[in-house]
Amino acid sequence: MPLTGIEIFKLLPKTNCKECGVPTCLAFAMALAAGKASLSQCPHVSQEAQAKLAEASAPPILPLTIGIGKRALKIGGETVMFRHEKRFENPPGLAMLISDTLEDSQVNARLERFKQLEYERVGLTLRPELIALKGESGDAARFAAAVGKVVQGSDANIILMSENAEVLAAGVKACADRKPLLCAATAENMGQVAELAKQNSCPVVARAPGLEKLSELTTRLGQAGVKDIVLDSGARTVRQAFEDQVIIRRSALVKKFRPLGFPTIVFPCEMTSDELKEAVIASAFVAKYAGIIVLSDFQGHSVFPLLVERMNIYTDPQRPLATSEGIYQIGIPDENSPVLLTTNFALTYFLISGYIEAGKVSSYLLVKDTEGLSVMTAWAAGKFVADAIAPFVKKCGIADKVKHRKLIIPGYAAAESGGLEEELPGWQILVGPREGAHIPAYLKTWKP
Ligand code: SF4
Image (cartoon, rainbow, N blue to C red; front, side, top):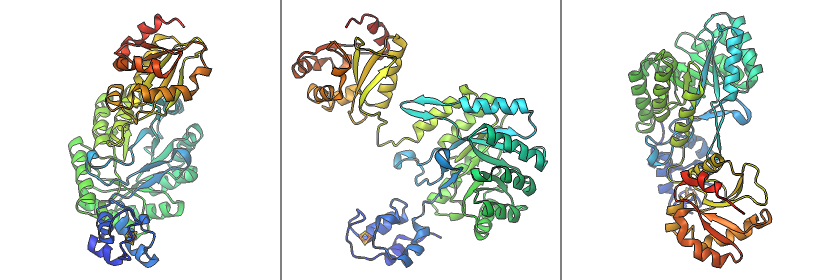
């Protein structure tokens, strides 16, 4: 059981030195108990106390990593029920199912599709992370061969799916260096799968019918030395699986019930045979509260909306998504190309750059840091006014890139045109359209 705030306080130095950023040791203890602070913030806690506090300071839903290297997937580590309370930490991984009974050509087609499903949006790269290999044949050699094919054809993180420990062992042998997720340990095979996981340092899915049996199983796995656990409550109807997600999150966060304090895996692929319905079900679990979502296949039209939804839900609600300040080239601009100006609110940048691209006139887009505010808001806040814009235009280096001296500002910042002409001697300030959608037509009239 996690320690209470008072129990934690007893283990702290009680000097109230404030180095943790909190006024008193008691306040720090309370924050630690609530999962709102990290033990590492106190540099004076003794080693003995550290060991005792480790459990209390761990997030109520333990984090774990599947895979290795740059593409390794971290899930769990969540500390709040609702995004607006703080933020959600680690986005759920999306997994494409591949059965070992598929023909080679079908497997290759899926691997190829997996590679291609990569999108740039608001300066981020969105893509799915996992391939779930299902040992449907029940044949260990066949399963290992399928795993080998995936290892060769993809750098995806891997989930090995079989309740047969021998089949799982054969799969692990073919991809142990990828640190796959073993799916699943059950009450029946727990001993063998726990050993396999420990020998290969792999995380494990604990699967049991219902939350009571599931918490018994995770307790046994913990006693066997397995710490990295993913929960599968066995539910394969949308309603039951959704209910389980909410109860698991609430038990871990509100009740501090450690046996359910792990990330979860859900299987929309087993809840419907309709591809679009499956995507809709998956979208519910992106919001509440899956750690991994397994889909029967990936298609751009179903995966892209899930990736965008996931990105939106897992952004920090207290911090607007922003791009970096600077000069962005759209197309292949030259010294006669138009120069447009906007703010660094990511959505604004994304829309404006898209409209410039649609206009098919290569341009420079100057992106001014407005702390992630949109044009209107930044202007109203005094962050997108002549005094602030002019120094940026002077120092960004655009004057070395173009021969002309014309700057197109957003229509919503038209009031700044006079001030900018004063602040930027030699520059002509052109007021662009108020609506981004009118940019392509506007650019057609461009003359340097
Ligand atoms: S840094 Fe440690 S000792 Fe200092 S106030 Fe915070 S908890 Fe107390």
